[in-house]
Length: 112
Length: 113
Image 1 (tube, chains in turn green, cyan):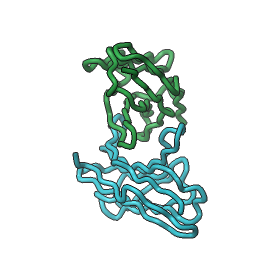
Image 2 (cartoon, one colour):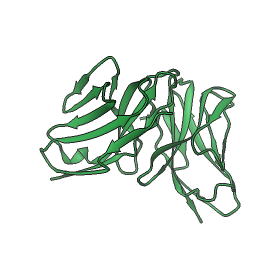
Image 3 (cartoon, each protein chain N blue to C red):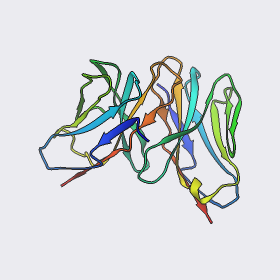
């Protein structure tokens, strides 16, 4: 089955800095890669996703890049703000299954 | 925002007791899922269902049971066989097929008395 590794487990940045979270996956058939943000005590919410036919996708301060050859994808947050503080999860879904495999999460802390 | 509702928000279980967590969605999604979340463990899949009256075990199904009698509802029972039930439980739903984002409920926090 699919295996997703996510790094780092904790990321601390100053407000205004950029943050990058990386995930690697094992199944070359995976073709859908969503990112979820979970604020403390709340539900995970989709913030951006990318499909295997695209290399990069942007939405304001958030971007995701995908390298299919190396089987890794990354979340980039620019001009971080304190409200970006949360746990971020990556996931990968194989083309043969609709069940996503999640990474273990990254706790992002943005210091004012 | 509505969409997927979990109840109760907090639940306490006595030893030897079965407890049931509710999950209801009005998104017309065919697929529904239950995850267990422990600190540093990410989201681990307990059970999932693609369609009414059908469900499959996930990675950590032991000690849990589910039913899917209605499209809108996917309750999870934590049985007395689950010896370490203390966790945050999340229900999710999605359209069927690969490449679909999941919509999550607000979760239920289960603790042992």
